[in-house]
Image (tube, rainbow, N blue to C red; front, side, top):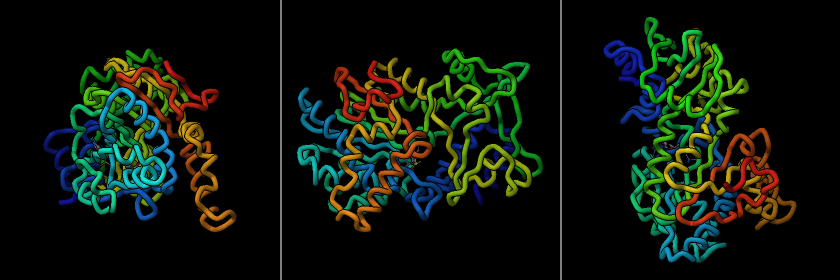
Length: 389
Ligand SMILES: C[S@@+](CC[C@H](N)C(=O)[O-])C[C@H]1O[C@@H](n2cnc3c(N)ncnc32)[C@H](O)[C@@H]1O
């Protein structure tokens, strides 16, 4: 049975689905989900690019930040350095980090116990092969974050891939958007809120929503941050994602929902799509396309603080990587003027360029029982979205 047919039957039998339930099936159904079925969904042969796909430069720069975090933790008596990457896919970023640590930060390399956390069994199975000679550094490949992490929990483009609820303000108040059927076509329909947490979430943000406004409330992202904060015994949480502060996300600027799909590098949205014969593009091909939404960094930060974490920095990816020395890396290890040098510079440009990954992606750095050190990734303080608390 196709995933589409399965979802159609589910709606016929049980009624309309919340957008979170639809996304959960589309992306993570245990056999047919978009992420469940594949080792890797990104890159040229996939549906979209992440910073990891741009080249090893992203991992190499992050290794500089991890080296500093390792030294700070070692000074507090942590014997080893747990590096827990969540949403690790096939282990590509883990490999790039270990390559860079091995060549540039031998103490970090020696201390690192790598745990790759990934829900897709197909992607997990591919991790040892991707790590190659570093596979001995892989302490565990898991479905969930282990307890008592002493080190850094890192997630690149995880929170934006978690199933989210969608809501809209009407003249009768806040309503939830559900996925229903017209014939066998998926359509959106308004209904009452499926849980009171949705209204509570928005009320805490103190945002003014006028009739016609539509947006996402990602309860799963908040829950994930809470869980990660609890499993971190001492160390750092580094989150890199498409994101905005709540005043920006829940304002006129993002008035039309941030739900976005990626299929073979074509972008779709909540607007109509010809493949859906007039229905919204984001519902068109469940299981065949990625579905994402932008992250509400204000809530993520607030949840982390409630759990006792300190905010060490919130900046955009461009300034984060510049703080880590991206410009010093511009010619590193390549013959000046050669093809590799040009490729290397182009990769750095892709990671840094405003309007692309450099500004759409934000970096939130949090610490637990490590004080409030000034981290190197936040050293471009003049241009930081927000500096240390
Ligand atoms: C957009 S991909 C990002 C992959 C990789 N981090 C990168 O930047 O190239 C999101 C990944 O997170 C995984 N994922 C989703 N929810 C997860 C969870 N709760 N725990 C671990 N992995 C999860 C998905 O299966 C998918 O591989």
